[in-house]
Length: 196
Image 1 (cartoon, rainbow, N blue to C red):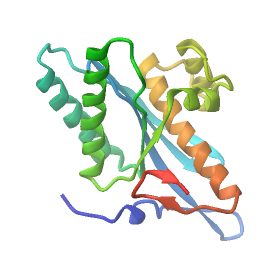
Image 2 (cartoon, rainbow, N blue to C red):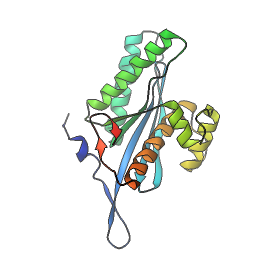
Image 3 (cartoon, rainbow, N blue to C red):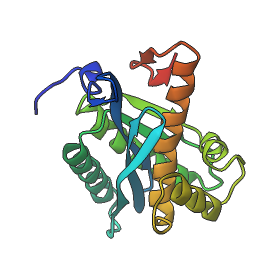
Image 4 (tube, rainbow, N blue to C red):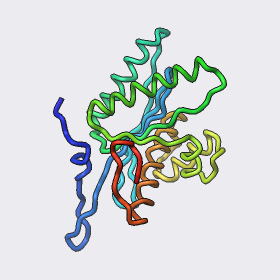
């Protein structure tokens, strides 16, 4: 694997009228799960978001270590295929079922390791923040998220629920980073995976 500094990954430029250029970045969003991990890839160029792809990594086995290996391999393959500049993932939330929370944390962990192994800067967003950004309501349901993702990315149909959540996470990263840039503070804190 060829090592590249994280800041070297987002130097894609697109021509603008008048010979000027603006940055173009690709964001991979991940909605982790031990059974189904959703992923969504979008391209950001200024304020324009373009859908590149989405889907689910399904682990149809009962053995947890094998499921984790499949998630790691799947995320690694997606990164290799799309060459994203940033990796955005949902933060851990408190689940009522401790066993489910532990499995979710492990699935999330292997996805993050897959990103870090390819020198991708990782950013984390709470589910409530994602819903607030995409729908305008931090308590929105999955159907509302699917509908807004379809509208924002101009898709012909609503994506599958887990894929829509992943796309919403990627959209949230674009929104947060754009707000930071408009505020005159565009430095990305790659070590902590946050905008600062």
